[in-house]
Length: 330
Image (cartoon, rainbow, N blue to C red; front, top):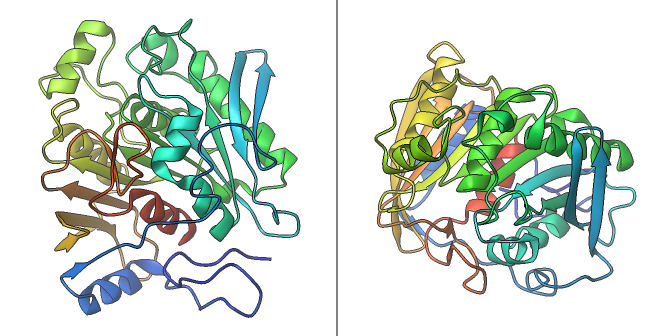
């Protein structure tokens, strides 16, 4: 049974789904008919608050492979059996953990709505003192080794366990997690079909700790890797004082270059109290190749998140919902 389209407001049940709006042309038509100011309704209910602690649907697990192991939390909708599922690998930022990240992003509520299996890997302090994914270390920037190999292996194992089609395997992350999500999009385009990068940095922006700080300030001189061919949706606060917003723009521009300079469309709006410039890349009726959301006044925090989570801003567009909409519209 197919999950509901995010734009439809449906609940993913047979007979209740609205036909999904497909392709860039449909998205642009929707934008032209939207009011210039609107508010996303936050998710509520048991799943929305289920960010902390184990439960029947949110359990601690461990993945083991030849490349290494990782502990993670897994959210499974109670009615996942029989639904056409998608998988989202959620990579937390520095100092965060799976419970905190689930709480701040409210992704578990969307999992119930759209039929998502959501995995939240944990970066232990033994691997990085601040709990950051090591996106700036060349040992963790390539295919076949290090953190990318472990995370891709986890995604593949879960896809096999829950019989999820490769076209419905996605990765998203915040800050260091966003940077690692971009690495995964480049190193494993055969595993992930789309990536969501919030307040992150492009693959290859740094090669050590010193260059990482320069990249975060927007003054990096390192040659970033070529953009990956998979679709990407990028969120960044224009007032982010931790990771300069030029990094998000660079991720977007590299995605453009990987697709031969597709057409660009831009629109401005006020969403949940924040001004937003939204730029899309694509052609005709095909799904958008990339989206870039620049949030005016936004800081280093997950847009539209839950205040109970760290690095989450309750105002602005609902990044979680927009990412899922982007992932599933292909």
